[in-house]
Length: 461
Image (cartoon, rainbow, N blue to C red; front, side):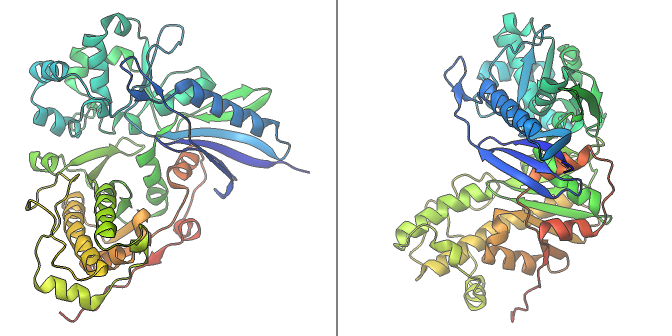
């Protein structure tokens, strides 16, 4: 019996660690999920348990190698970004994998901006809204001034996807998608590391940059295997669309964050963009992706819980609510703001408290909530589109199952082709594709993503 040739992808999220096998046509053969317990760093702050992650990866990899059904041809890694692993001369890990939500000492941040320029200037030039540890370059600055004894021992600092690749190859590299995701490291206009990186001599700790599509051929237990250099998960999720679609598009990725990704906008960010929470990600060829994001899914969950409590409904009731055109038109006649948002920093009229007394039913209040969230969604999508010539909008993620959200999207963007896409593979598929030389065509998304074209609403306004 001939063995099935497969590519292994380890897709490492903050919560779920996933492991996929794909065949040569990118069909999923195996998928496994696990959640690993966190550990703590020296300040008792929760952090990824790197040793547990390595063991889980090694155990799964060896199990597939031992499995008589499969012949492993390639491995790649997609992971969350903004996370560095610091290695000494011998390749030993020097620090915990610091959590990007860990607060950074104010005096270190003050020192950084005093030495290298204002928050706004740095944010604009590196296309990174300033967010402490979430700007992974700042983590290196923090180590240099907070823990100089450790900093002196660093030979290489590699982002998490590249560290996982290093475990298999022993070779340290950097690649564009990890460097380019809100790290403060990259000057997009200069297309090189930012001046501050050279001034602090941090460039010496960053390994050579290789293309994201690079792979290293190695022999493992007498088997020839191609090992990818890893990819940042947001860039990876975008990749199947870029590879299969010729005409420009915007991808709206919905979930805890709603992120509008435009790979066809190469304008430099303005001060106003930064204030509107715009940033750049990087394509695998180093070109910029203009993105704008807001904390939509997080806010939605907070507000829906309040609605369920107020109207005495069980949590989950909201999933059954279908778009009601008459209700929508009635609410739009007296358009106003009724919800006080808690986790969204985009500019909007602030009210002191949410007013639910104006709505007779859960459904009515829910429609109003979606109208107010949609106002912000329209704003962030238009920011990401900028002056680019886009006709197609793809929507993926959790909100594709939300009937009210999808109907409002089709209504507000009726001059675009708006399509919903369903793929549980997310960033894993992109990681599998980037190291393959296989060409794909226009039908690829249709086969893998159950694409549906949304019909614009005909509203009697």
